[in-house]
Length: 111
Image 1 (cartoon, rainbow, N blue to C red):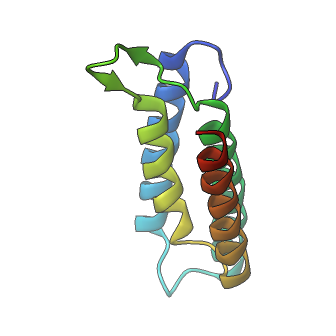
Image 2 (tube, helix red, strand yellow):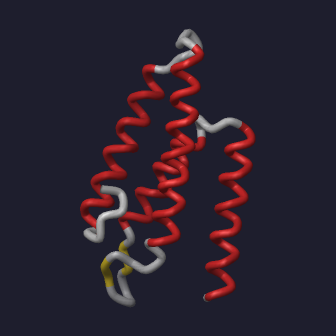
Image 3 (cartoon, helix red, strand yellow):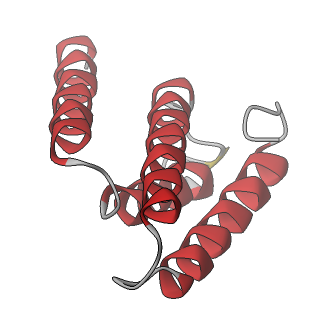
């Protein structure tokens, strides 16, 4: 439901992902077997990519007017991206940062 047209569905899906990610992080520890940590890293990469896609696709406000703009999908995507970034490998984190920089630069050039 991350890419549903209805903003409430996207928002709810992101809230669910964030809750799952936090729960999985709490279960993972240094005593966890290596495959669990690798799964968490891979899953975090997938989540990070999906969140960046949502940030790109959801450039306009979901609802609001010129005085009070509210963007819950972008806000939740940013929070989920930040939480998932803690589990990325160094190279994946660098790629994520580069992609975010490109997104910001593209937005400024349009703006």
